[in-house]
Image 1: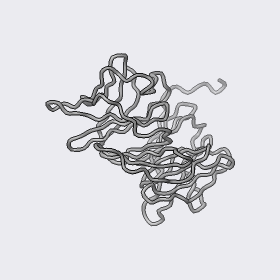
Image 2: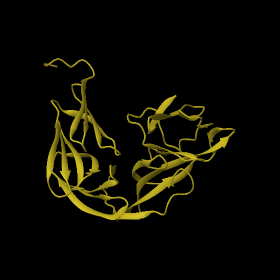
Image 3: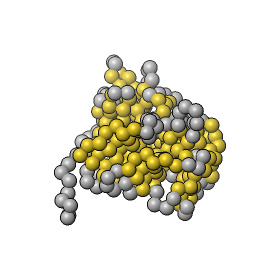
Image 4: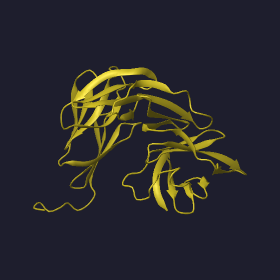
Length: 273
């Protein structure tokens, strides 16, 4: 099997697996035989990063939604047979030109997509059809979308300078703007809990992780000892996982401003190499 995507519901894990015989969601009885053709589900096995996925689970229904390599959000609905659940035969399209998605609860997910010159969002539950799409803002050729904790979202509007708008996806339109200094790369977004309730972009610049707030300020979150080569942000918790060029794994909580883990994962290269 090729592992295409991985999803968590609480402490339970599921992995989307594929070979030339079937598509299977490991961790459940969900399976589809034979697998969908490449033109219906663009998921090459030799990809460097896993595909975004959501597993929605209700009392009497479950659904797996995955974003393929062509920017299409696809869903498999499950049918029950003597206590076991199996994929329905049809693979169904939810949206095209998808810019981002996030699972917001065990029964619901949201995605943002580009259509007719604008950016729209739609929510999808464990059963039934998607909600009516909602307009966010005008799209540009540089548009990117991120989802974060406390129902936050961010849309990239320009690259020179790097300009984003932030807000809550349930309280539109989003209009709070932030511009980042040259060299910074946005990797996540969050909304602070407590009194201030500010939005913040989580940005990376070589070995520095910094928060850029919607009120114009910024705050150093973490300074790694070496350049950070990979970085991933959990949209529900604002936990940031980083790997440096010397293979040091660092995990930081952006919302709580605390270091959770720092460990050397492999032998460091020689100083002169």
